[in-house]
Length: 235
Figure 1: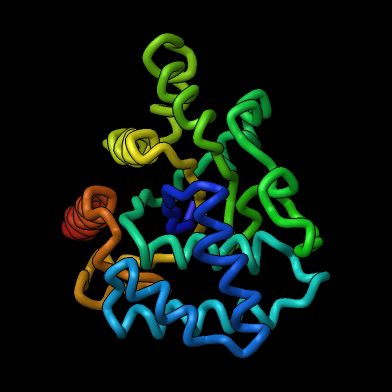
Figure 2: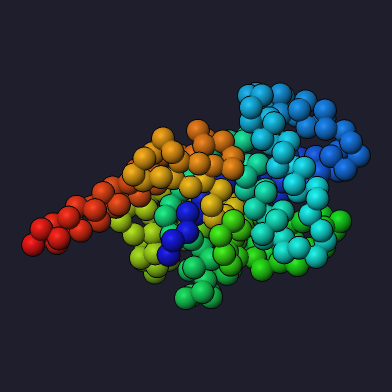
């Protein structure tokens, strides 16, 4: 699957503090409050402006627009202005539940998280590029980590999807969320690494907050594919 999937540690309370409440400030013309919030968290001016721009787009979202393609995606973007997030190429919980619906027990629907003032329809999973995926609540993050230790089938299923070393990145994201006491949100194309020219990688959020482990794995995979293609052409 050609998705650039990222995992964002964030709690429902932080979604309100960093996204939903600031949206109301934008709508009231109180943009200076956003910059004050950014400064309180030590955000550099460049990223504070990107944060403000993201909120402006969010404030213009119509109530009938799909939540996952709008607010959900923007929440993943703004999380990356505040703390680290994690990357794996083509592996996500949304793809896991398509094959194994029983894993939905680890996920919380947006209806349980989002303020009533945002009635947008939801899919609660990745459906295309530039889209949020599933959300694991803080308790579900802890539960999944526990089950990975105690239930071999869960470990086998996740290692099967997050292959070629990527499971370690997922485990790193889950562990980081658990230590912070927050949940974990997945999304696509928040960050788009360039495996050939890393300096040309892009992110709607703060690129420097993207954990590098998954990016290096992606670069290694592409490098091997190029080497294989060259060898076959020579043969």
